[in-house]
Length: 169
Image (cartoon, rainbow, N blue to C red):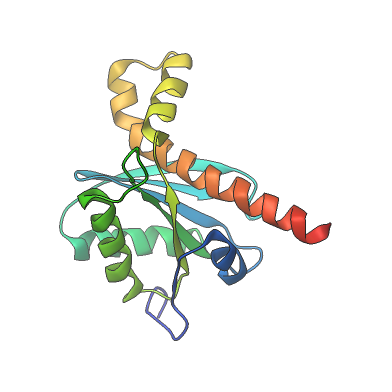
């Protein structure tokens, strides 16, 4: 059954381990986990660019996970990058612990490899981009989480591209 956990599901502590775990030719998803919403972005199959996809209203974990796995399965996602909301000094507080707990719970339901990406300032960057695009305040509120997810995912994709370039040298 798609989305059910199989042997080999893993939370990768480094982007290098994650890059090795993602099956070739499959897009990866990025998640911005908020308290009220989850922003979702997806990459292209070449892992070059991230696109904002959807903002999910949070309910209970089971409902959130079911909707996410349905979305990721429909996009044939090969992995998940979760934003890790570190404090500005690099330490991890309650929000980061919550993101790690979400990943541990999701890991029980899927065989997709997962990793974390430092999301400091991703929402700020997304807000600036939307302001520059002349999005209204209402429109910004509507799309900010999925745009932040795209910033998170793009950071991971860029790092993975750099790793691939280093391997070719």
